[in-house]
Length: 155
Image (tube, rainbow, N blue to C red; front, top):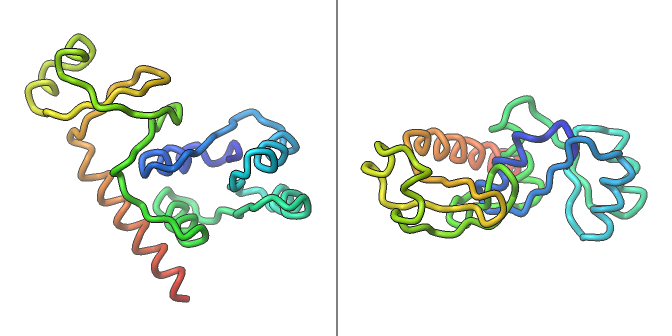
């Protein structure tokens, strides 16, 4: 994923997709990595899209200015389901594992420990996650993106 799609990479990770994000990578490096790994290259750069396609790399030119638009467009283009059942770390793309409260209690605010029962820890960066007050907003964004993706498919 190119440098213009950091927010989209986080949303794809939340929905369980292995989304690498390279902030400072050169275009050739992005194309090479996609070719070697078989990943889909997501970009907002039309020139990069053309160059990647000429090399046989599957590439999607991402359109839309906001997270919902971009996520819906990518979901439609790649036929993705936007669910949070198998989330990855939105920060680093690492695998998340369920954590017992006792193991993370020193790293989570007491109010959150008291209010929630399920916690996940990133196996790469150690970040801790739970379905807090932001959860409704996440679900709403994903539902809107799903509707936009479905609409795009029907056109």
